[in-house]
Length: 540
Image (cartoon, rainbow, N blue to C red; front, side, top):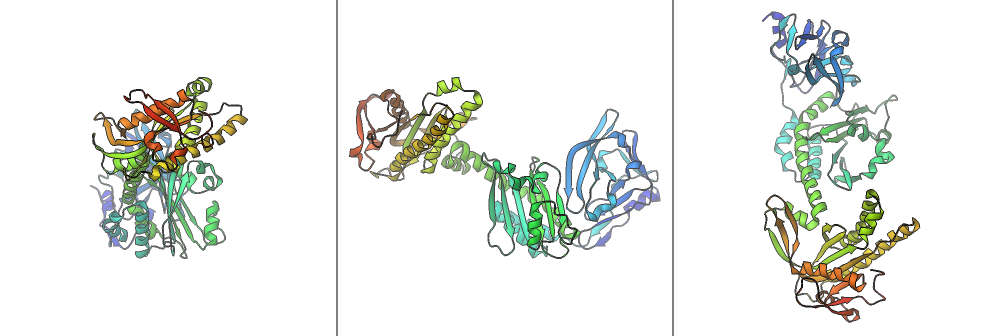
């Protein structure tokens, strides 16, 4: 190989720390893709970056820009800026996102503004002074390791949760001399109520602050005008130096940070393996802020740190989804290993079965969206009351609700769970009354529901096929609760309960017996009770 190409692989120079150096290549550099020369320049720059191969940057006048198609892909470097990407096409061949450029780089890398780089292995050949370069050159080798790598290997894996990892991470940075004043981590979640959880570490504050960002919160001015909004949209990261009269304070949060003495702000996208964009922000109060050495060493470990954070986030999301779709107790049981068909346990509980009245007529008279909104109003009121008073909603069966209030001691003649179930009925009625007030003002028909309560033994566990399981309750007591609720329609009474439950209510003599009734599918007639008129909920 000729000397010109060989010079590109000169013996690495040792140095300390992390740095980026840009210099003229001093040669004619040419790039070939599918037989087309796509870049040919004697003005190319070469960037040398710690522990990375050297990268060539070409003036756009020396690049076949007609072969490039801009894409939406973006990447971020905390000391170079946001890179835009193009797909390279020659004839029927293309290399997706093979070309990048820093169109608005940070000061440290301003010399490559609008220059174009090519991913080394995405093209077919590289030439220096007409001699082919067979291996991507390296210019320097570090004399010392990144100090954060030791923390990553020896400490990060010990964290038991995301807040624990954030705290260990921040303290590890400070211990290594990183000029950190505040660290904030924005992690998106799979949660019907929350869009993200934000963890904040700050000097001289003992605990990690945790903030739950709701989906509705994304539309509020506080988020819309924050640095988080463009990063979530995929526009890359943000770097703002906060010192001096010409500091660029284009987000309200930056003005607040300056007032608190901050000197530098960095917000970087942190991608998970599925492409989900999360965010890490760093604030310094040291004069001069963060150096390239600081950010470079941190940038090196972010991908691995991101995988650890992803593992913690996935566990939180999994538990949230299980709790959401199975109920809190059932979700935790499954998460803790109750996953095999037949896994379960025997429980003693109050069984709640409730049903919306007139749902067929509502479905016929309302459009799909209006009917779903009505169902959700009903479930918010009734199921919300169950959860508020310590019950667990196990299943929505159409417009019916199956729930339980676990009784810890089956021998207890008047367990608290029974009283809580009745309190939940009263609370559900108050909530639905409030909904009905709004519906009446809009000229909509009111909602009504019936509740059947029973006390008994049941089995709580996995049933179904090997490939589709349901974690639920089964047993005669469950069926009897459903049959008692059926009687609400027949007896035109909104609340009915079994003898077993009635006997567990303090002051049971005030309950009203409605006589013995045959329950469908139950051999012996059962005595059924309700509340006296002054305590009974209105309407069936």
